[in-house]
View 1 (tube, one colour):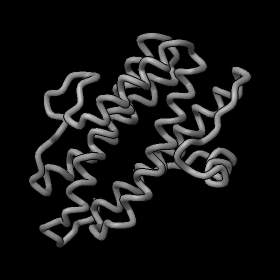
View 2 (cartoon, one colour):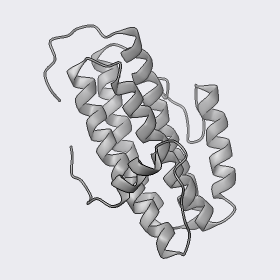
View 3 (cartoon, helix red, strand yellow):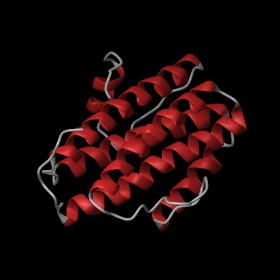
View 4 (cartoon, helix red, strand yellow):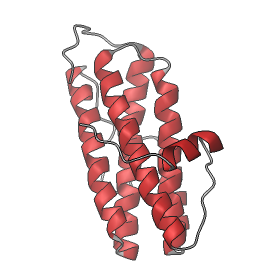
Length: 179
């Protein structure tokens, strides 16, 4: 992480970090739950990546002395009520078929891309920007993986949160590396 001389963060940055910690947990928890249901390695592999995203956000929470909204919450339990509701909806949909589970995965990454890009509009802190840029790479890679698997199984996916143009740009480009 960049050594940032800023010792404080804005209210927008604070809110973003707290929400992003749980949004990354949402992705991880849904993928863990869907892996248990379907046994497809894509969920196990991507849930591990989501854990690393959670860890990166936790480092920022610690650095800026913010409470961890995910602390001690087991899989499927969220502090943010909207994320709790979303988790329940996504798991219910993903439990009906493997195809729906893969579509849920693509939907989560689609949503993450939108949310991170929106948050970056109000963030000036270089530590947070660096982490979020890496989260974007991860979400684009995950979206590519889910979409590829959906196509392999004869399905389709229409983006719900990013534009069709952004979606096409992501899924037609190569996997990215990041830290």
